[in-house]
Image (cartoon, rainbow over all chains, first blue to last red):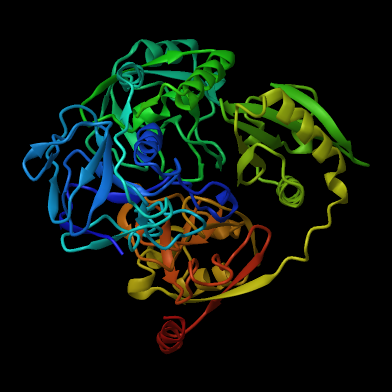
Length: 316
Length: 255
């Protein structure tokens, strides 16, 4: 069985797949990769199913030793990776020879880099998913971020690795998948609770991602929104990308480790096609919101899925 | 916002309201019948009713028995149900139409007789650091506060916030207390807290702003247990005051 030895874990490295949907009635949030597009493409590059578990690194990557031969791909943000001192190209399948060490540095742009391995990271599934949920300490590798000295098992789901196949993401697609800083949103379920002026403030303003942002939520700094007419509301179900306005008037975007219910009014919701962009936002990044119609949101998602399904996506 | 009269009761017309939440989510609200007088109230979902809760459970049950293709997740709350779906498989309007059919026949759904779950709690001391303050705020003794908290059968309105966290109501009026002004950075697992008219047990260590009255040695959520979550929507809960010795014994048994 092939292994990965964690020599240095990086700032926050967790095992993630596409998350666990369907357990809202138990209060269990889906979790999963913060940038699911990067994870899906990374898995395709190494011949895995799209939802296979990989390592998600945050802002500063780790150092990983491979005692055996392996096939890997790095996707998402560029963390200046080297393999035994040779730089590793992003969005490519790469052959790792026995005894080689992969070293990741700090991010150059974006927040998250994915290390996908042919066969995937083999951990015990929790509710059908390998994703780590940090707050509850469930899923992933012992329910926590990786530490120095951890040894991960590489799975065999994709079949045994015999001949290395060079695959790369089409150059034009890399451009099309550039994370956005202008996030497109649809109106939130309580958008009518906010005055026209408050909504204007929200859509004109530039917001800064606060330091205390994490996988649960992105806290924003900027112009405060006048609180909703009704003030506090009864808790209700909330969904990924919801922009809730807290008592202080500042927005929080609910992210992958979100609570399943919440009691703040929601002014807007980031569209599905832009959720991956959220995963690449770093503290101090400046963002804006752009209101779009439901039809536009759906069309953008359909376009994104069409791009991912296209034959020209990955070049062999 | 649209109002639909999906079911006609003998005494009241019960309103169902659908609200788009995101490009992949729709919320169904079961508004209290009293508010449904034709006048458009600004925030009708601001009221907890047993009837609304039971309708949430019925729709949830029906959706579990007969899943809708394309639906990915369900987030029940007091009087609402958020439905997350694949927007490339379903339009909001299509989902709403299917749900209308479900809601029209959900009154026939038989809900299971609620289970009564007893939760042993050691009140006060280091396990219930806010008990004294809560009692003082209401001008009662700590013993009376314990008696009030443990003499009510609570309804599990829904689970949310964190795995296994049950929103229980309603607290006796004499115990209704606002949240702490500044939430604690870390609340120990098993802590029993109150906030407004609600009470609940923290299943995991997390930041939290509820006032803590005590702690239970039971595990509220355990992934390797057949029933991962000790509580499920619709259960009835009664808190049982125990001694420190009983706490220690139960803690060992549940370890």
